[in-house]
Image (cartoon, rainbow, N blue to C red; front, side, top):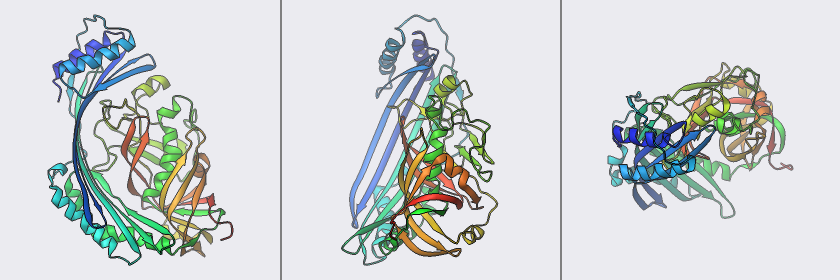
Length: 463
């Protein structure tokens, strides 16, 4: 993408300003999206984005600038802006030598996703949308999208790294709205992966469309969820969004290095029930959040965050490492070249435990089963959160009973971690997009079925 000799010259130029560290991040990304609304193909969009960003770190401060001209002239112009901010353009005489670094392929691509025709992608998507629409007369609208992208990334830095990574993504999303004329409820199906279009050989769009429609119709006929403190069983997969938001972000150097985390200074201490072990693992083959190389040119790693309730590690990027005086964990990520990197999650999950799912349900006489979670919000400083339950059911006498809607889980991350007292052996992952100071990136959340012994459920006080 950019010749190694040019990268060496640009890095030497930035270091001449007095910077301690210099870095080039470049990318060439192609993306295609097909959208369907009410059975009709509404859009078939293609885009290509090429550009590079240059960063300098001096002490614990950083400067970042970017542009979409990756020629030597264009890069030099961006580098000059960085140098001006650091201390001016000087003469270093530094002889920078970059060593090509080969990273393992952890997300192989058999069928390049952007080579698949828009017609074929639209036909595949319509199968799912048509299945959702025909599920019930109460399904009034179905929308869907099938997005693919293929991005080549280059990182060169003053640590001597000159490395590349290919990241191809495919994802289908089908949303169904059920209505009785007075109110609406929605359901959603949205799996994806980092890999080629062959992923869709394992995903049945018809089954996915029916899943979205069933969820919408079920919640349309659901009663109101009672409010109060109770035991809650959370399903696997996207149930992990609470751990991601209420705990994961608080374990990133973005928060920890600035003292803005409830887990600051807690290394080696018990922060969760002994049943809880959690990881952030960017090395998982073909997973949505996986990366072979971080956006700072470091090899992706599997990070043990919590082991049997004990805090073992934070997720740390290059700048966070300097500020915290701790080794980087290869956690630097960014949306694209217009963002400077910071510490981010990849595939973050609570690991499988030893409990059986049937025993977890049998242990609850009266409670809530949060089968699928929706969106929510969290304050990383305090860990306070609230999340909606997309699909919920009451539990009565150890059995799943009638569906309920309007449930919200409210609490603090640190308290919830302590109250997870049963963890099943069936961990699953689910795909999402995570937003932070370095943009929106693909991340997996995950967990087995778990029991939270006591948590506040927002709902109807009269139910």
